[in-house]
Image (cartoon, rainbow, N blue to C red; front, side, top):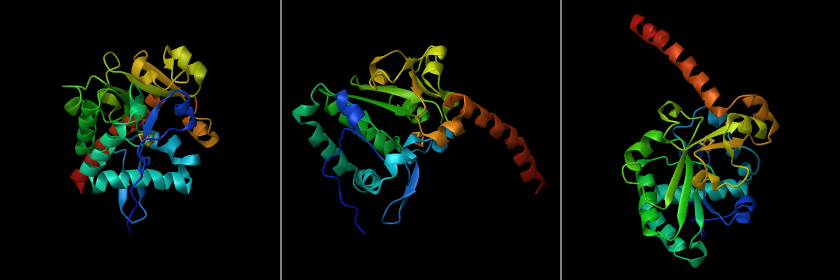
Length: 248
Ligand code: SF4
């Protein structure tokens, strides 16, 4: 089964259109494409995968899911062709001086894919790009030594590499149970404008989406706290597992 290539790569939902931002996105986390191939676009997702806004609601609508999977198939099947198509699209005057958010859902799932984006940022200096990412190690290796001047990134908590984030030097984002908790923690709220992740203060708070079963699952704590608790549980289990392997 052939997956049709998307005709347009960059889109706008209502929220981003209101602030003039364009968006490229992939399907969230793991799934199976119509041709049977499996994927994982968020290899460093931690507790966020069980609280992911992009795995429920409109993101599950067949047309939306198909569009995101067509985007991913293009990247996987023909990275060089996708890069050329993205460059061609970004050459249009409507992107001049604009912000492009890389990923509404999904993440930089491989070195090759991130490196392709870095080439695109440099080749289109008239546009600006930003992202949230949980790929801390990949960014330390591939982006931080020589970052493109028109690219901003924010490390978002809730991933398996949270422990590598340095709140004193990195731009960070955390998901809070509500707006009041964001203010109380002294973070700037992303509700003001999504590009605050690129241009605002270095600590950004996102209120949990108003999805009842996800809100109940998150409870009164932040993603960073849930991930730290999960990390501690894993660390406690690890010596037991090692002991069991030795005894086997
Ligand atoms: S990294 Fe983002 S898109 Fe992926 S599972 Fe986590 S919250 Fe969802």
